[in-house]
Image (cartoon, rainbow, N blue to C red; front, side):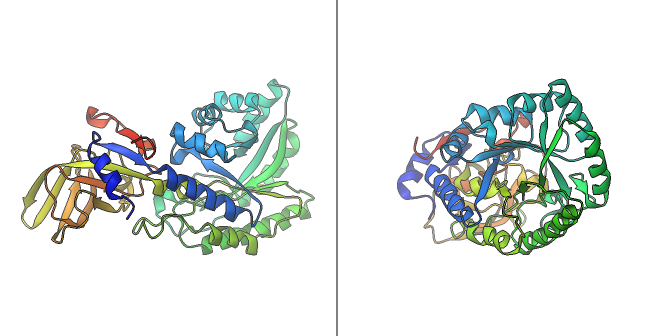
Length: 387
């Protein structure tokens, strides 16, 4: 059981709604990921878009983990919390001139580039600074991640990356850009990937691409394999720490890595999701026909994933773990939208007004996407070693 009786009593006394982060689970996950990455000597860059809580970033910095950022704000946040600029990569399909200028001035490790025009803009800005911009080309490998269509990023009809068919145009352009230093290739095929064969297919595509580039006498010292490793939303206690060993083993077995190359991975969800829960209180019970509803004091403004793409989160009544009688409920929030529902036909112990519910696996893409829609305010935040 994730929530022990001693902590449940403390959680009941805190004003809801709030995000609760288990620091021990977070550190254990980091340790397991780092240990598994040693088999391939991989460098991990945490994806700030998953969660940019200062306290969590400071813990990551303690373990010398880098950062994968997609905005100037994320780069600033990473640096502020102790992550070395030499370990920061800057991705994103829509970098502004201001963001590029900032990244180059800070001398971050690498900019992941997604179009020919972006290459030209970076070159001009680097020229004005009298410097060379270290870049990796984000290549779209057209590999199916077998995940939700809204979080697939590696197909030809996605907005991300440079299509392999345009690679020759990009290489010709690079010959003209004197302020660009090509150091790597970048790939990212999607998020919440649970079928590891997708990563095998990615490796095979990269192998083909590297052989093609070598025929043109082009070698890169860095391969950024992206992230995307999924977690167990259905049974979080059984999958509290993702199977990082199996994940890195795929790249060890199938990627034809050159002896001089460094490998980089951009893990986000898999590092932080299971340590976080959204804690909310039941305001009302109501019945409509055969439907039983629980109306809680948190909504889609605090955790938008279920409303955005029908994502599943396990919901538990931590006030009544041992109650023998159970009922199916739709667990809904107070927001004036029909999609404001955390789960339909959720089997819970008989639940009453005032009971405390935990919405699990909410450490990634939860608090970071929260808003004050309906002016209901942002959730509070508590850490396990502070309550």
